[in-house]
Image (cartoon, rainbow, N blue to C red):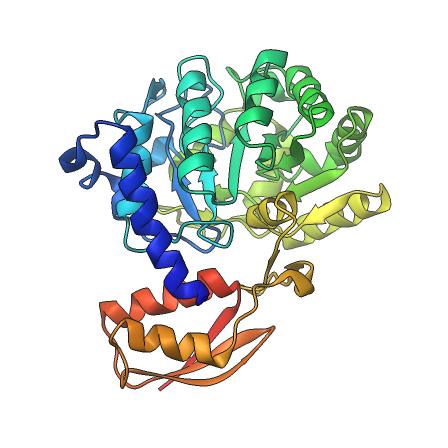
Length: 378
């Protein structure tokens, strides 16, 4: 079996099965964003809703034009899955594209919860990809049971940035205690839960880090992921309006530019992040370098696709040999455009004799399915 060709074949079979099981408006789904967007480094973001009412002062979605209210995504869940399967860049299966729910909305909000649970179930049944969800909303026993039934391997990230200033910085978000309680609940149901400390607010999060870690550990969670803050004019001004002096002073020192515009950029805070990581390590936490790393761990998998790797056990990387890569090149009809130079656990070296969309698709499939970095020479 050729794992690259098999991934393409499964994509067709999964789409045929979905169309057999549901009456889908394919004209609408293939025009949807999910059918076109090329995955970023850590996967393809999946929208269960549009907008968020929590209005966290650091949030990036409002600068992107998303509303301060929430509605479920306009497509039916099965239409979203069809759109994903119609995406030429998407690779299905356990060693396929990472999927992430919750990037521009709140997937567990009452308006989106049922939609999200249905989508989790459909993704598990028709795609089988490693799936992650980020949230601030607490869940009930009934919801936890459904999550376990639909996809017991799902990776769930619970966002906590501050304890002391929650009402100022996250004015309409759920109480932090509700989040910790749900982290513990999901953990008892056997769901892979990670404390998501993002964004790090210097002068706030770093001061509270040990307390946040302690509360997480009280609820049985000893995994953590830290993420840096991105700002533009609008986000910076919202944070200044909080009136938190230590935060404002630290931000002024760490801005990426003296003249911020609409583009979002990371502040200079690697020293703060390093300090928080060291504290978490001293507390016995497992630390993930990126969100997809937690996803890999949840699925007991492995990956070496980027500089953060290897994540997971290198011995669990897919077995890829020279013959399978060469056969895939011939199968796609791009022989003469690509040549294989070398392959090992750390990466695959290729020589491109010409480029084009077909070659880019080939590179995306080889990188994703092999879970290895691709080194290209010309």
